[in-house]
Image 1 (cartoon, rainbow, N blue to C red):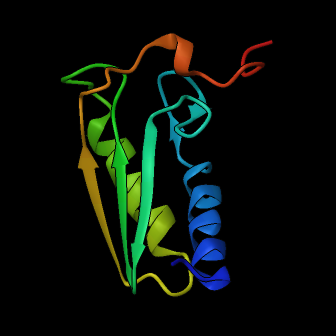
Image 2: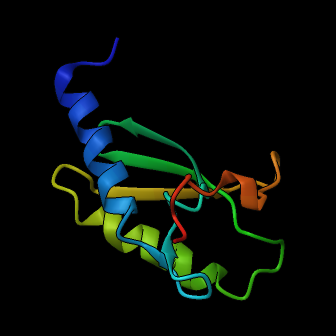
Length: 100
């Protein structure tokens, strides 16, 4: 069962992920709906995410951004990213109100 500290750490990671901007769309990856999950196991954070399209030219930029943002969270020593394609991302996954 997750502890309050664990839940707080997961929330802090979600906040950190919201600082990672997709340079093509100009929105953060959380608002875009690209992050599917955050798991923490001790000092290891596992981030499950997708990209707007397979072969996305911003894959390295986004993945590096995830690693940098999450590695800066106190208590995290290793960041693992997992890109998945199911469910496929679509524009309906963008948070309501993200665009004026």
